[in-house]
Image 1: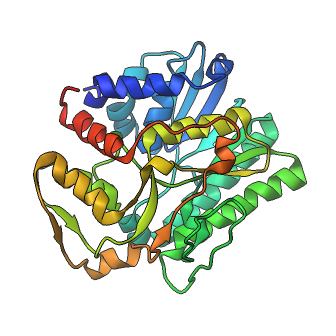
Image 2: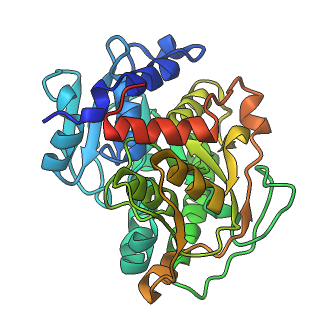
Length: 346
């Protein structure tokens, strides 16, 4: 069964908005290796790229059944190739592509707390093998880093790409943050020592209709509550002030950096239209379905994966200087996510 969201008018509009970015047709005829192909970002990226002429996608995932459920509409296309592989193993050295985008990662709290070793190795080995292949075949790596690399520091002014944040290494949750930092350093090292072409994006907190059901991020849980017409459960006072970005805006940002970003440079991907307190995010979800926001104490396993950061706003001046303009307001993005997943009309 083809994922229902792919035929929803709002999702189709999201894909068309991505395809309207300046210079996107320059990617016609290019080839891409994309890991984490079945994830929130991977599905939207592949759907957008496959709409371009003569684009060839090598989609990497551990489970072919999951890939078929998420990307079935591409499996009959000869320009779509699914590779069943764990990203902690090297890629076929004979593979030649133009771009490598290693999206595979544990990106949610229960993943961090249950599998800290695996989280680190997926990030570190996934980056290394992407960079190794790119070095051999001359591809450009677009490395997806994270707001998490700015650590636990509170900044009232927000974080630009030159900011450095403190990080507590005395918790297992550091597995994600520290491995993402190390991967950025690895990217810079390959660029300096081997001349590998690599560009880095630092993604703010992402949400959208391609979210996975087992995603334990707060925003995803709020949306799941709304889909079930349940009360929205907050496991804190919700005063954390974060940068969020709708998945279609995140993919547009990735492609702007791919097309126009400088080599060996990092770019924040965020939207000034989507900076919001956690409780207000929850409130928008609740208002959409007529439910309430309730507060609940997290269990010990959940606490291990939670961020202690209270303020993490990403300055997006640099990426806007190369032409990127986010489209969606936070209200619009949340509402369209719920409408797409509920199958509601516009």
